[in-house]
Length: 314
Image (cartoon, rainbow, N blue to C red; front, side, top):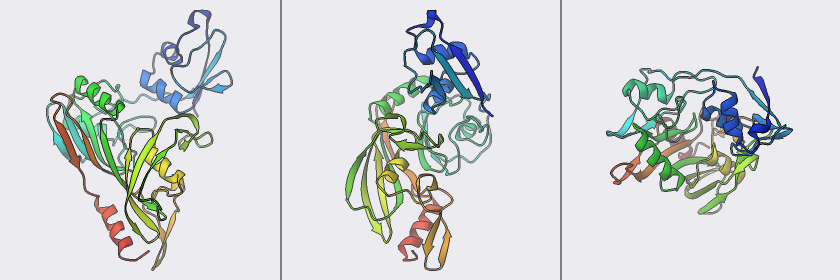
């Protein structure tokens, strides 16, 4: 069970930021851990759920934090790692589905960070001790391209590119249903699901701006193959957005995809992962400014499933 930490804001802290106050009160927690608690809706100000770390606090306010602290330092592990590109400042890796990007609550091994630390001792520290080198993330069951920074200068400059939307990401997804429009944009804020806190929701708690552009590659029976181009980087954004227009990603039972699929041979369990793959990634090299572009083909399990659907077994 998670512990509850309760603090009452003293007069001396009036006007302070919530995140700064909690960092002082909880010295064993990193700033990134505090921000994650706030994002996950686990911090309350009085009776209201805190929406962001920058909220101003006032004397006498009761602050509650529901969480159980777990030390999570990544250690090197000899794990499979597919490196697409590497130089003195960065790596681009093709992450396999099922691999978590970095250590965190309940996950201390088997992550991409563990594998990276075995390959290279020095990674950027700008993302915090839990996430050395990690500039952006993919969901556990999403495969594809991830850029990793080897030093803090590269990390900061890559982060700036992500923030200013200069990084171009293209995902391939197979979704349920026939998407009517050949292309479009889903412009819906994404926040934490108020009922199931491990999920996100269009709207939800503390929603943040989220925009996903998409185009139809082809329609295949009761499915549609699409390319999704997220313009923002919210948690589960593509999955939430596609589900919000009635087209959940195949295998994504968290966001409404069916657990069973109907084939000519009968009903079968759906994919054991989401049919979502980060296929293309383009950005400027953080040190030289040279334009870089990378591609990762569909992994074998997704290619095989797609071929089966296209063969008419649906």
